[in-house]
Structures are given as structure tokens and as C-alpha cells.
Image (tube, rainbow, N blue to C red):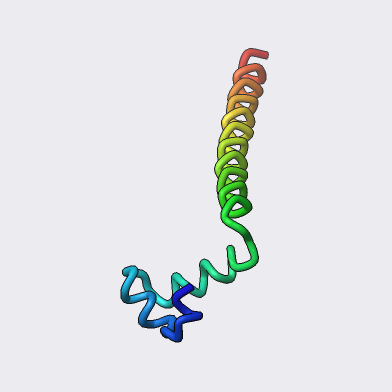
Length: 73
């Protein structure tokens, strides 16, 4: 929107309080996405992180139980 009005990326970034590096990183990551697609991506990333934690917790529990079972015999 602001770019189409002839303002530079640097000016826009200063106005909204982010660095140009952040702008270009976000643009690379979300540039082709619509708002709802970006929101869905963030939701999926959160869900993925939650599932990874669950798998790591279960793996740790399995290892602890295996060690306990081997110690008893």
C-alpha cells in the first residue's frame, strides 16, 4: 500500500518501528500468502511444535521405562 504511494521500504520500516532486515525476512517467508493463509501457517507451526513436544516427552518416558525394566531383571 505505502510502497505504491512512492515511499521507500526504509521510510515505511522506520514509521512502523521494524528493521529493514525484518521486513525482508517476513516478505521472503510470507510474501505470496494472503492474510488467512499466513494465519493458517502460523497455526500449523504452533500445532507442529506442540506435537513435537508430545513425541519427545513420550520418547523420554519410553526410555525411562525401558531402563527401569532392564534394571529389575
